[in-house]
Image (cartoon, rainbow over all chains, first blue to last red; front, side, top):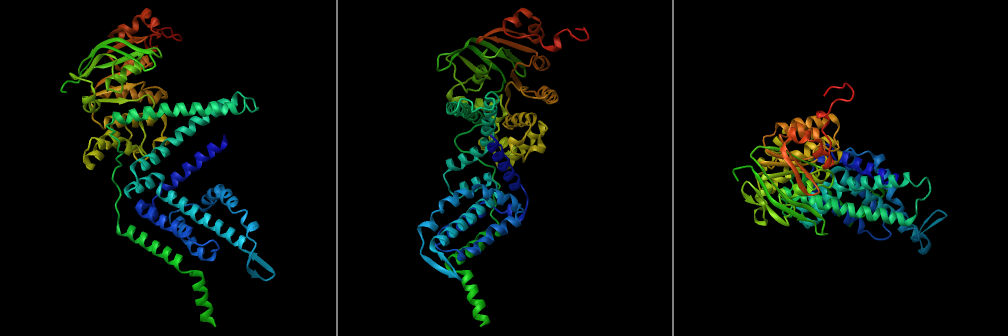
Length: 270
Length: 250
């Protein structure tokens, strides 16, 4: 089950990256969460055939990744890993929507291809923004931020625990998987029924562990609220970061910046 | 709760599925005593420990901590008094970083932030884990996890420590350091363990359990010299009390 191992490794890597100390990492998690949210809303709200107008939005993840010292190669590989999803979602657009919307020389471009490009671009933008957010804030920071921003406490707590125990759970699954493959001698074991057994076992083990964790929590005075050490301070830089980027996103959403720029340049030169 | 004593009288317990786990268990633990609870797998050691801070409620009999009976209404104080170190540190370290984990208990006690930080730092220093503060628990070694788990309990400043298999899964040096650490505590201590050498090194008194009953309760040296009793309870003399098979000296 190499994919579990690889997944764990990547998660761990993202976690390490989130532990760096750069200007972006030092920003309040809430500032980054809110800014990313505005970003996502703006990107997603574009029309079906918008491609060029989306280009200014490339700046945000690229700038943050550079400033936050996230290796582009690592981000690109993570994006590629989830890309098949977006590639498939729009795959039929070029076939279904054949109306020609643009003519470049002899090549006529149909609406389907334009909307397909728009989908892929939007996927790249939103997924990279989310990756950059986690890579500069850490999942725990994100959980803390959404809780402070008023998300239901249960939700944030779930996220914290999910992240804490996914390593333990995956480790357990991996061990069971190895035990199975050691005794199946290159064959497929006993097929699907064994998977069912393994999953069932995993569920029971998880259940028992959840009970022990809960006991450990009640032993230390847990009363339903996970109190996190308060270390969030909203500074002027955080506010400036959020307002500055958000203003840029809204501007780029309302006005087609590449078009304006083009007009400015051509109008000026003629 | 001025006296750090434990009194268990006529304790019996059945699990909901009917499994009888404890049968008429009685003993007293004095202030500052260190006691080992030993016995084969399934003898009822963990079940007994879980009664000492109210994780389980007795089917019969009662448990008193410092004179206060363990009941629903006294649970909060009892759990503050009796710190419990679990067998698997992964169950006990559930927060994103070691520091937050150690601070979890004091935060729940409602202490001011500065006190919480001071307590957490002191607890981590005490177990020699101050440098692990910012690390996530899943990136620690077994020995480091154990130390952090003990710190989470110390930060509550309990009067008594209850430990389930503290030396399981540790390498020899980590185990040695653990024994030194536990020996340096002045709390009333109850340690359930299969590690009889650890029991011999730490505890003056040993309680032997077999099939849910107390089969012996006395000075550790005497208990571990009684080969008949040990065999009947699924145990063996600790290595430290056996004749050495290589050099032939006892």
